[in-house]
Amino acid sequence: MPQPPPERSTSAPPARLDASMSLLTHVMDHSLDEGYAEAAARREGDGTAGLPRKTRAKLGLAAGLVLIALVVTLGAAQARVSAPVVAKERQELIDRIDGETDAADSLESEVEKLRGDVGERQRAALLQHGGDQGELVALLSGATPVEGPGVKLVVDDADETDLGDDGPRGTSGFSDTGRVRDRDMQRVVNGLWESGAEAVAINGQRLTALSAIRAAGDAILVDNRPLVPPYTVLAVGDGKTLAETFRSSADGQYLQALHDGFDIRTSLSDQKKVRLPAAPSLIVRTAEPKAADTGSGAADTGKGTS
Image (spheres, helix red, strand yellow):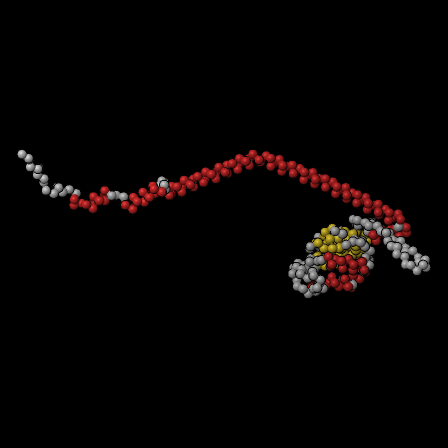
């Protein structure tokens, strides 16, 4: 006889004790938000999961610092190794420069000695072959030092050097300052010669008929030797007459105009005795009379100087 199937209970399961706290239970069971979980899963799939971004940045910075330190260390080590070689080469260059400088100084001294010897021989030749006019020739050529009565003329720059465009130098290109220029000293020296000076020197440097007064920038050169202001001009001659004649000459009035218009400082006084040295360099030239015309009608083209 078949047995009847077991009776199934149709009653509901017993209620959970925390059924009334479903929200709290959900929070406890799902503490990580689904969005964070999806992002973590996505990073794992892309292979980008790992250390946080800040940690990676710190590690990258540390690696860069280590690399920089390594490069600096290697550079310092290489510099330390090459330092003795560089120092040796530098010392060799210094020694070569010192040697060449000493050689140049020696040659310059030799040149000055030879120049002085040539000058002495030229002066002796002037005195020996000048005949009755030997002393006068030596005086005019600056071959010998001279002394006697004369004048002392001091010319100096103005205290203020921006004095306008008017005055005797307004169109000469030197109107921007109150400095003494080479053209001014040329006129002063030529005025003294014209007034009767027998010998002239500027700042102790003797002038001759072949001396050149030029400019190099703001400096005045006499025979390529620079002068420094104030410029002291000594001239041998009859002191009182020479001073008066120069003041009344065109060049003396020019110098006075520079003083009035540009405040260039000047002073002129006669001296009982002034002494001028010989010229530092001497150029000897001779002149020969031109040959008389022979009546052939052809002009003699021979040069009269040698």
